[in-house]
Image (tube, rainbow over all chains, first blue to last red; front, side):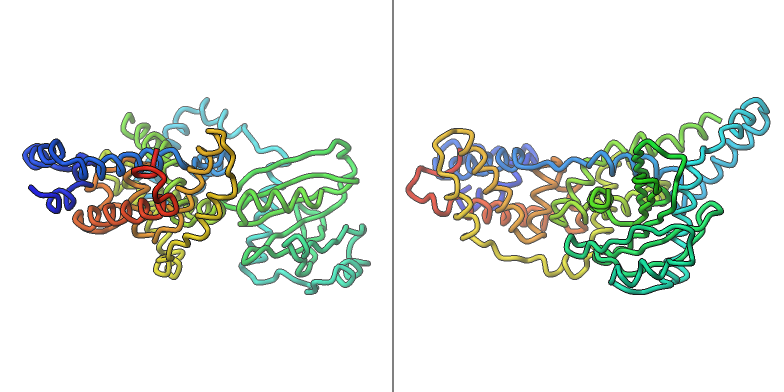
Length: 243
Length: 181
């Protein structure tokens, strides 16, 4: 084997992809040729460098979301569906297990979170995002006057990359709410606001439901719920900006 | 009953452990966190849907294949237009920006340069390098994930390494034999 032959298989040799019978002559040539040895050494160094560089690990929030998504993911395979049905049937047969299962009712925050996601999805699907469509907070805020028994804080965050695009009247868990609509690139953020007299403590809640990210906080007697398919990090920035 | 219990659990057992691999691959394909998250999330939903099609034991390569297809479906234009030429000025200025003598600085500088050079490689070369060097996949597995013949895997790896070496040793000519530690 000459240098050209070796060069042609050097990567496969380095990556241990050659059969023993193929690598023997390469090794023999390397033993005799300093230039090819250097070429191999450079490639080995390069490999070490690349391996040092950056292994991007999955962000914890994404990981949590995926572990969670396991339960709602659409299009679950028929096998899984059958398995779930069978498991449920077994649970039903064992009444004790079933009672435990059904007794675990979701708490109020859970049901409100579900409700705001429902509203977000409904608004997008029905294409009824706006009752008032304006990027001007001084147009949107007065629009709510007389339609709600409270005045939601309305701010535009265009300068931070979250422009206000409008608002609408909505109902969440049986009570009227202001729905403010913000844009982030191609993504829509629905921000639901209503007064929450009973909440004195500052709360912060982050969760994902059916692939949508939800942030909830309270401030100055108001309850805020932000819902979007925007990625976690950018929705966090949005929520922190408002807080 | 045993098989019923075993089956739904095995998605967690076989696929979720490879989320880092999925994210790392997606991150190197998309070159930004937000897109990588989107791709991995979509890919996971698909993985769950097609879970019954996972025949082999190698859930990682299987998941990476789905990640790649998801990325390709989402960013078809970017996937094609990914052949960016290496901007050597960028790399040089980056290298000159921190002339500190400390070994740590030099190390950091090297890491930055390598990352920059890898990111600047056309996707075809970048992805085989990432799959080989960071994931340690065999040529056969890379071929399956990237949907290319094994011979192409080999030639892309060879050319990708040549280009990386060319970029990384440029500007250090005369500064040693290979310019690499």
